[in-house]
Image (cartoon, rainbow, N blue to C red):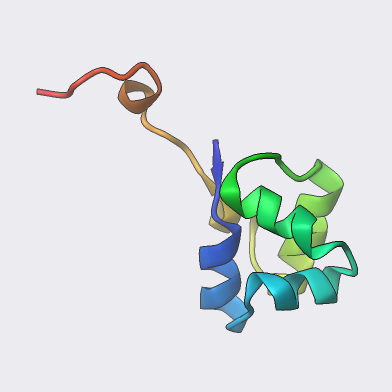
Length: 75
């Protein structure tokens, strides 16, 4: 599951990742790590992100097609 933090922050509040980290009062590196897909936020932090951006969890999460996960080509 991909988390679209950067895109959602920009679209909903015109926030940079730096600004989002400030609003959430968490280290900037943590937010950048989420955005790059190195780590994933806890459910509690996902809830905080949604509150800060006035969005729904569905706005942040992007399901990857099964073909992509399995590296299959679609015809």
